[in-house]
Image 1 (spheres, helix red, strand yellow):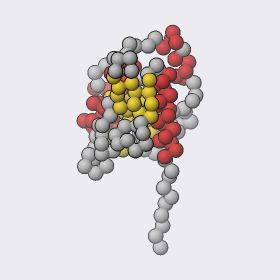
Image 2 (spheres, helix red, strand yellow):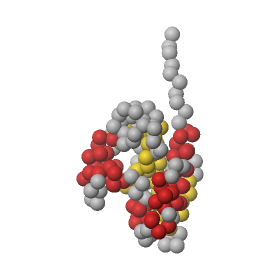
Image 3 (cartoon, one colour):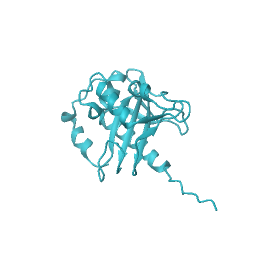
Image 4 (cartoon, rainbow, N blue to C red):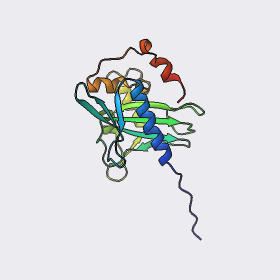
Length: 178
């Protein structure tokens, strides 16, 4: 007799993470929309229509359970940034506390590309590799924490000016539960 384990349905979580990324980008003054379903390599497009620039954002999430990394797919890096949302995890070395709101990290694809493992089979980023790479990244003096909710990287990439978050109330929005 062959026993099979039920596969956890993750589509709802991944779609929710994509909309969370869209919402956070919009709240940071970046015109953003979800890419068409099935677009290989990215999920969200951030734009600066007044300048004529755009960038592609891949969104990954992990909701619950023990994990040590995440799969990036065979098309990586077909994006400019990768947004990782983590929530309610236990064990592993994931950068989140149990019972918390999602922690959202914004990583440039150039940071992640050198640390992708198993590129020929199932390309994956390990959190231990990510912690080391983040600490060595120029301008990331706080290591992984430098990338938490760091939407300014995308603004800079698009050629948009920095936003004074205290002046427009984004500080309160960022800390509120979505």
